[in-house]
Length: 230
Image (tube, rainbow, N blue to C red; front, side, top):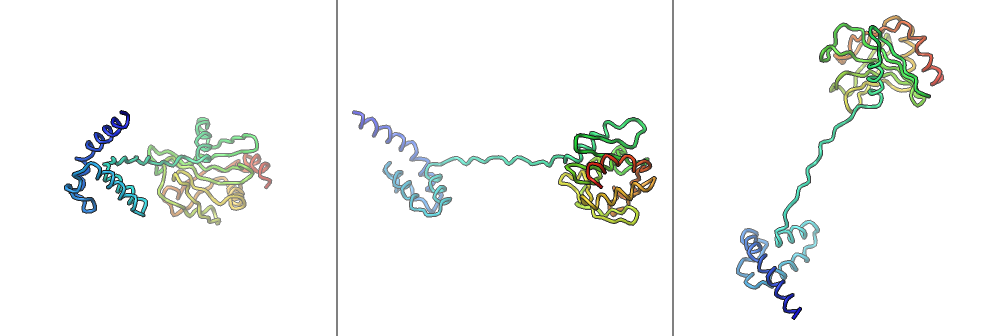
């Protein structure tokens, strides 16, 4: 009795799939013609033929054609690049900058960073937002970086301070330009500490001409010099 019921269920399922297989076979030259599927058992035979396909993807496509497996596409999520830790440090210090102040020092355990707000009356950014020059000793590494109000397309920029010329690299977000770390950064800080005003010259339009008040910088850099031993 149970065997008879099982055969009936299998036959019913096969008959339900038969019209779909016949329709596919009519348009696919690799599938048998509709007249060859006159018997429900031919569906099983057709699926067995797919097993002989050696290439994995083609074998899967064969089964998909037989059983009309729906194709599900998974949408690719757009990836965005976040702001770097250094840029966030600079913006956090900028938010704490008092009215009329152009410099702010942050000491955080073994790390310390100092920001200078550009003194130019106007900038090339929206609403005349000003770039921030940040000098730091973080993880015992000296750095000089320029944090920008919004992203720029330049992958790097040629920057000259007095007679010192370097190539500063942009981060992935286009929000931060960085000098070489260690000795190149220390060299720039020493130059800037020896003058009252520092002007950046660059092949980048958003950087060229930026001016910073560096009077008193030598004293302000002491926490950085102590932490990075220079």
